[in-house]
Amino acid sequence: MALAIVDSCVNCWACLPVCPNQAIQAAAPPDLPHFSIDAMACSECLGDYARPQCAEICPVEGAIVDELGDALNPPGSLLGLSPAQWQDVQQRCVQQGNPQQDTTQRANTSAARGETP
Ligand code: SF4
Ligand code: SF4
Image 1 (cartoon, protein in one colour):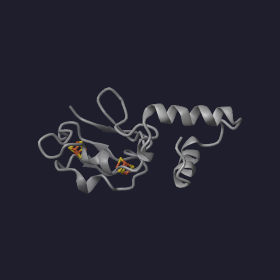
Image 2 (cartoon, helix red, strand yellow):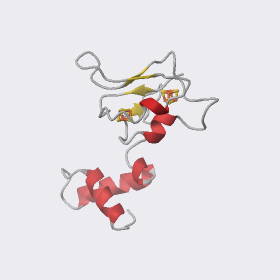
Image 3 (cartoon, helix red, strand yellow):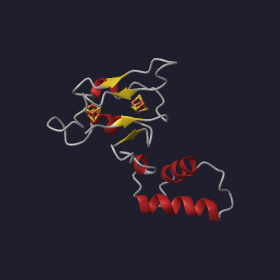
Image 4 (cartoon, protein in one colour):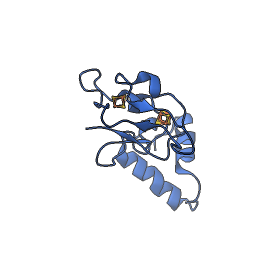
């Protein structure tokens, strides 16, 4: 039972100090291009916190995944959007004829305006 950090990690260092088990290793390019989690040391924070602390603080959606590869912070989650709302945002982007515009940027703009997706 352990989480993992994937390629989208931006090496921001936020997660490393919050881990109660010192399970997070800093990036060390070129061999280790992004932060990683020692699977033997990671407890998913059970017994220490109600939620995995690395995922709680990570600013990048999808950078931390569980054993099934599912993101702890899936797309839209850091904006407070449910999966259904995120799906709706993506559909609206396509309907408005600009599918290449970054959907996160659009959602951020809507959230900043106080709009409901
Ligand atoms: S889930 Fe908890 S124990 Fe595992 S790496 Fe993240 S902060 Fe550390
Ligand atoms: S908080 Fe997220 S983006 Fe930052 S180093 Fe950790 S996994 Fe990477």
